[in-house]
Image (cartoon, rainbow, N blue to C red; front, top):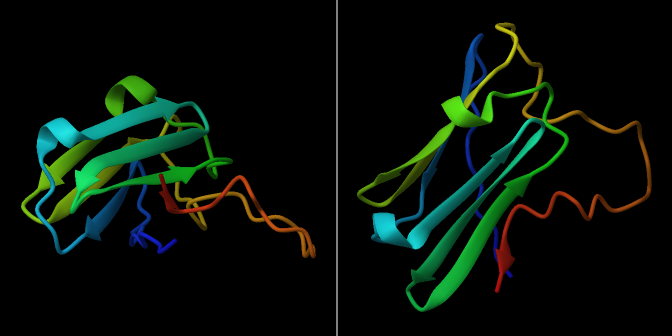
Length: 111
């Protein structure tokens, strides 16, 4: 499997992730789910493959109804509305040093 890496500029109020997939992504092939502390974006039929980007254990609560994914010409933008208007030091809560693999945060699963 290969990964979709997104940049996550952090600012008060919102977190926006931008991914240039370098392929045409059709709006009807993008599905997004937002929960208080996680989100998932599924891209279907991108050059014959399906991909997903999921992040759990976000650094704070988000407002799911005010969060969204917007399709661009060659990728997508995820905007997360923060419940509390403050800066996050990262997109997700970092675990203490551990040798365990964080299986809940596999940024891209090829299905």
